Length: 501
Image 1 (cartoon, rainbow, N blue to C red):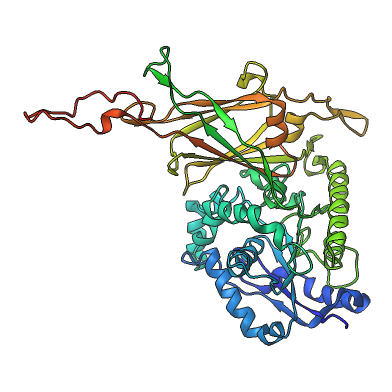
Image 2: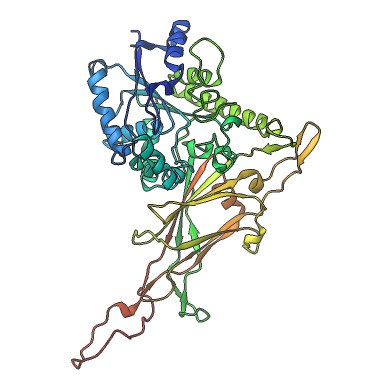
């Protein structure tokens, strides 16, 4: 029996107010379906999303719930008959549909969602570095002038290291593999790393950031990620320590890998520009476009074997594109010879908690390398950016240049050596220095020794590594005492004592 044709749903990103954001994609899908009947799309049912993201009270779970109602209202009868839909999202649309999928199906334990293919264009799966600018006073003033809110309810989700994105991604790590397949969903990520010179903001370096499309980093879009848990040892007596005890070691658990999801870096596209945007620049006619070519490859996947083959094909495409785009020539923008090297990058999301589940708000994380675990042995230029989450100060994201850390060949452009070959870093470690370090309840500094294994596990090109650091919350004996002495006594000056067992 022939399969029923799939409905198509297009979902936009944050702050969009007009359906022109989809560019020529709806018309192009209709044209491609006429040319390629094997796509099995119902071009009579292409739905364009219109959701509110710029009111401060609206949060991502609210949009996910509203999507469920709108889906049932407009396509409920078709879905009840067993028909399914393919969803193409842009930017924040990816997390919105993922939140819907998790809430109504994965978390609920319901099998066979009506969603067959989730094709995410430049999704902010791990957030965007630009969000902190979106939360700034300047953005609030601009929103006031334009008569709308900034949309802080959605922006809080999109900020790097947000508790909401962490929870969604960890649930995907735990349960996602069971939902990938023909009876579940086939997810895909397509992302660019180019920048339109006409949109450069010379005050804001994020708009031309290495490894980013000007809004979302490839590592922040990629749904392939690693999770590592570091646990501090129990405090031990230490006669050389000021307090008489210390807990200097962190132990790393085995790294856990998320379910494999095909990632393709699309050549020559940025986030949302009419001229170069990954979605908005798609023409309505049959003109070639790399995004539409990749979308069609995704839509043709029907089996796990198809999915695995496309994973490998996209990985090869990503490597080729990043080699081709490694040098960006900006010499035409001014009188100077100006080439920019674009390296693959990685994000390290550190979340610091204690063993009672409390977020530690005041701490430093110092990366180290070499046999002496010395930060001075880290290669110059390896750290591209660092952001602490404003809602959860216990989460901080480091943006790492992979070529600087993992090494790379010399880069020659038009006969000119732009950069000599780079050696690999001598392992990777870290020190965490929490506060307070004295008093009745305190924390102790701890370290993970630098090693080649840590370097491989933490720094993965185009990926995020989530590092949960669990420190011992040290409660000392003086917090609570019992006495049989009934005479009046001021006990506020009693010494804190040693740590409780």
